[in-house]
Image 1 (cartoon, rainbow, N blue to C red):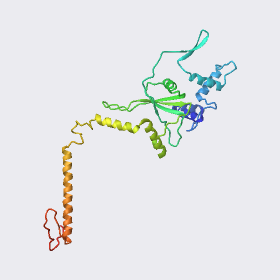
Image 2 (tube, one colour; image 1 turned 180 degrees about the vertical axis):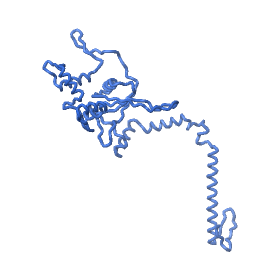
Image 3 (tube, rainbow, N blue to C red; image 1 turned 90 degrees about the vertical axis):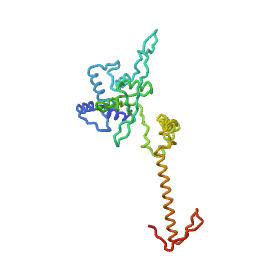
Length: 300
């Protein structure tokens, strides 16, 4: 396994297991380090090998089985395809399916970003899922291998339960199980738009628009929502934008009143200025001009 995968496996080890190992060995594993042996075994696997060797359970036709071969055989046994067995019929070996035909469960495997502390790089040898509480580790491994062809090395699970709601109040959040899966091949989670530069952000947005028409889908969803809420319905007299309600009529009257008052005020100021300068005021409706007063009046 790569060094990053070994570090990820050590970091995802349960706290109680790490405390027991530190108490037994006296070695404190710092962040970014691994407790694996030279061959990549965990302390538990290494202790299991030594225990079976002392009991004489590692006998092999070529002698005692080495730690490397024992580790490879263990991985092969753990990663075997379950549900099948080899049988001999008429002198020929055939693969027989054990059990009955099953169907994919109606559940959702939600892939989320790994929990990466600030200042540490993202670990591509781990994947985090949010799954229902009824899914077990064996189900996770079988599902990823059968559907996506993803091989896993270890699986850690923990349950997140919501806060207890008040009596009579609806429960808004549901409990879920978080599964941290170790991967054989690295997988890099797609970057968020907030972490990209402007050029990469535009390219990703354009690629998503060309493939999935995200903006058009949002606009269609918004239009359907408005239709369902009768915002654009012609039969709805209250929410029809063309309907003259009392509020709309009062707003139009107030707007016209402000326009009329501003026009009169501008004309009065203009007349006061012309009279102060001694000019003649010519009215459009009357042919008779109005002469300015002998003494120019000042505006109040």
